[in-house]
Image (cartoon, rainbow, N blue to C red):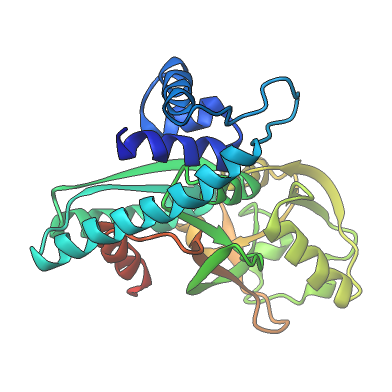
Length: 292
């Protein structure tokens, strides 16, 4: 029996998916099935109730998972400690990020990190917010990058920074000439928003409701790039993180206007699964993200 087989079993248990377990361990689904069967032959016990539509461990499978998790965490801690002693920073850092952070905030951090640690491979996946949380909890990735982080007892949250929110509009829009604007000025305005389940949308809805402002949502999208394209054709105005529209403002395809009401910002955070042993490479990458 190899420790890799125990890890595959734990990943399968946590993701409840042969596909995801295969993806995490970079093997085929057939290989995952074979390793589970091998463990069942070794321990002479059925580990997964295959007759059920929903994934479920047998009593023996639950015991194996509990002990295997301890073994894997001990092994990973040992591996991490030896790398620290030997001052080795290498391996792969797997990151899942929401689109706006991955496209606009993350690139300069990755560039600077790889200059300092060229032997580390940073693998980035762009996901919706709910998928980032799923990937972190399922061990598909080491770190998740999100806005307005949710509280979850299964997650560790590392605050990174607060990003100002600004109004954007077409350069010929009446708001474009304003030095600043109050939220009440948006009453009845055509508004390009994020889809209702996006954390930034939820936060903005709460702010607008508090201010007694009702906008006319004419379009809703799941990513910042499409929101910007809609504003560029003057389909409406929007409120977005300032760091995501630097290029458009420089090219004068969008105008940005500061918002007077309160201190509007979007908090960004890194998340990882509680109890997860972070490799030296992941620790250094996390430290790099916290730098200004």
